[in-house]
Amino acid sequence: MQNKKVLGIIAVAIIVVLAGGALLIPSLTSSDIPSAPSGAKMGGTLTMAMASEPNYLDPADWWGSSDIQMIDQIFDSLVQFGFDFKPYPRLAESWTVSDDGKVWTFNLRSGVKFHDGHELTSADVKYSYERILDPDTKAVRRSSLTNNAKIESISTPDDNTVVFTLKTSNVDGLGVLGREYIVHKDAVDKWGREDFKLHPVGTGPFVFSEWIPKEKLVLVANEDYWQGRPYIDSLVVRFIPEVGTQLAELESGRIDLIGQFASYDEAERLKSDPNMQVFQSKGTRIMTFYFNLDREPFDDVRVRQAVAHAIDKEEVVKGAYRGFATPATNVVPKGMGEWFDSNVTDLEYDPEKSKALLKEAGFPDGFEYEYLILDRTPWRDVALIVQQQLSEVGIKAKLEPMASSKKFYGERDFWTHNGGLDLQYPSPDNYFFRLGFSGVWENNGCCNLGKVIDSDLDAAILASQSELDTTKRKEYYSEAAQIINDNAYYVIIAYEDILSVATSNVNGFQPWPARHGMVIHNPIINAFTYVD
Image (cartoon, rainbow, N blue to C red; front, side, top):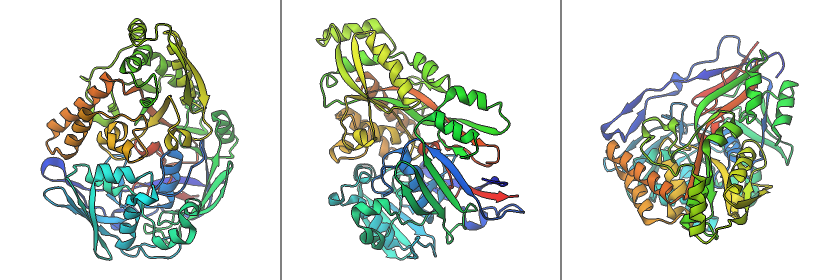
């Protein structure tokens, strides 16, 4: 970015909360979005670094942060959740829900165009959801709509209205329904199921231009974007796995932004550099230690409990995060505010108890296994510390770096793995459903990768989804969290802070506490503009 300055435009919305806290009706319209500041002009390229290359750019199949960060620039969803976790209109200008919580009606914006010129209608929304729901498509996103939203039917009374009828009420209906991205049939048919992933066509602020594997992804401004053309001409995303190389490129001026920065020692140094900016906020990502319950010996609860008692979370946070995280106690992070329950008890660090449990399970001398890891900071650092802690109770974990996240998310080929789980919609259900609901595994979804099947846990999750009384709903969440901890279905290690770094000429950027902590151009909340 040369001789330019980037400003952020922040939009405001009025949220009206109706009976039971279940209905959220925003009043934001296009007239509420501030105009560009005086002197703003089009032009320039924003170059950012991303550690992982996307797997695909098809909204039906995303699973990792690298996927969603780019999909969110190319496509639009019906609803956008902001920095305040509140819903804002995106493709849907407004929405209503029936008294029983089963019928959701979305009113679409008029005049929205896809990148190929096709005008958005309710038929495109219906097609996008039915495409995911179709078992033959084998979409990764299918489990969310079948098990969580529980869609019974989708109707289109007219070109600007789409109606979802659910089998049961869901207090998080807006979150689970409004966040899928919209495609149109002609574009999918033109490229075919596989090639559409590499030639995405959406309605988002940026248009796909070029993807050079292992090098970069290039997006250009959508001239016809419904909110107005982005002020930057293009967004170049360079794939740079190593954080040291990312930092060198940033300090040399060859990139402008690192959306997810993982060098905690360097972050402290950069805070005092007038040419750099460090953005830090309490996020909603949880660093999770996953077990594959389908593989011995982790099908034995005593072995899982032994592992949980062997992990010193305080040491992990100090060593891997340099304090840019908080030791976790349960699935719901502190960043969720009132939903966090400090009374949920954890399996505390206790090496002697760990050894006793291993002996009881038939492993008095421990055992050996392969520990699948993502070979970069902080995941690698977490794994190295956990590996050492496990060795102290006799468990020899051989670290196995994975070349692609497909091995974990797609193939589910692992014994244990540590990785981050992000907030996708502002509810604790986001964590419980994705980690512990048995139906997600049975429908080959993106989550519950450890194959947790627990009828009591399922019952608590399902009860929370339809409970309008906030106090009772919190009780269901606490019950679910305690079941996960007691059975050591996962070890929730840390609540991570979000770190981003940028050069001093990038202004108005802020890391998002949800959806993988990264926003380039959020069509409701944040639009970059340039001024001399």
